[in-house]
Length: 467
Ligand SMILES: [Zn+2]
Image 1 (cartoon, rainbow, N blue to C red):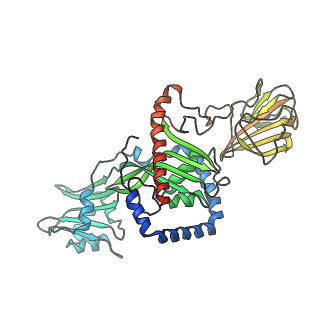
Image 2: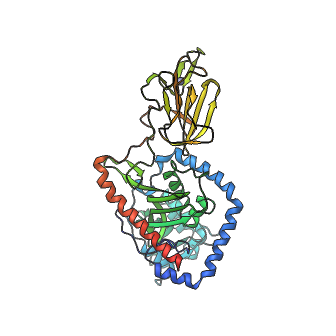
C-alpha cells in the first residue's frame, strides 16, 4: 500500500484525463482536438441508450454472483510463487532482430506448426523430436498462436541450443540444451504495482461509464460490491452520478497488465456522496470502511425487539407447534408482550407491509442488494410504514402480535442473504463493526491521504474541463 504514484497516465485513452501529472500535455491536446472529443462522446451515448436496459439486468445478475463469492477476490498474484525476472531483454529483441547468425526469431504465421517454424531456422524433424521428447513440459512449445515470437539460439554446428517464447506479458517458456538433453523453464514476471486514479460520470449505467473510464470489468464489479449496501446499482443509478477510484495496477515495463484492489473510492449517487477505504486490520482482516472508519456494511441491529426473550431459535428441522410436523424454522422467535415495538434491523425499502399467509401481518425489508429481513405475526404496522416506502435503521415498523399461524404474541424474524435464509444470531453475518478504537489512528493515516489525493485529482480534472 505504500507504492509511489507514478507521474504517467495509466492508459493512453483520451477519456482517462484523470491521470495525474499530465495536465499540461492533455489540456494542449484538448485545445487542438476539441471537436473530436465531443464527437467521440456522442457516439458512446447512442450506443448506451440502445442497449442500456438489457445491460442493467445482466449486470444485476453478475452483481449477485459476485456478492455471494465476495471473499474470494484475492489477487492472482498474491498466492502464486513467482520468479522475479526482468523481461526487458526479450521485448527489446522483438523490435530489433538479432544480428548474430546463430540467433533467429520467427513470428508464427497462419498455418505454421512447430515443425514449419523449426524448418525456417534450419532445424529438421530430428531436432524437433529431440526437443519435444526431452520432457513432458516441452510439448507446451508446440501450442502456437499466430503472432507468437520464438527466439532461437543455434549451436555452431547448426543444432538447437535454446528456444524461448513469450506467452504473455507475464509468462515466458524456454527450452535450453543441457548435457542430458533439454531443460524446460517457465519464467513468470512479477509485475510492479502502482496506483491509478479514475473518474467517471454515469449517463446510463455504471458498467458502460466505468468501461469508458478505463476500469476493467472485475474492477467495476469490485466497485459495485464496495458500495453494494448503500446503492442498488440496478435501480438507484441516475444520470450524473459520479465515481472516483484509486486502485492498484500491475505493470510490466510500463505496460498495464492487470489490476489489483480498489484502495479507495467515492461514489455520488443522486447528490449523496459515499466514501470507501480498504483497510487491513492488525489481525489481517481486510474490509472497506468509509473515510471516517465506519464499516461499509452497516451493522444491522442484531435484535429488532427490545426486552424480548428468544423463544425459538433458527433450525433446519423442528416440530411445528401448530402443524405438528417436522419443519425447518428459518428464523428466530422473540416472545414479548402484545404491542411491544418492532424496529427495522437496517435501512431498507419496504417490499411488503401487509398480510402474508401463515406469517399474518408481516413486513419484508430489502437492504441494499443482498440482504432481506422479514418480521411476522405483527399486531399492526407503525404509522407511515407501507409497501413501496422506505425505513431507517431502528425505525419502529410495527408491534408484537399473534396474527397468522401463531400460538402467542411473538415476533418471528428472518434474515436472508442473497435469497438464502441465515441465522440472524450467527456471528458470521456481515454485521461488520467500525474500526477498532485502538486502530483508528492507523486507519486515518491511510484514509486521509487517499481522500486528499482524490480531492486533488478531481480538482485537476475540473480545471482541465473548464479550459
Ligand atoms: Zn418463528
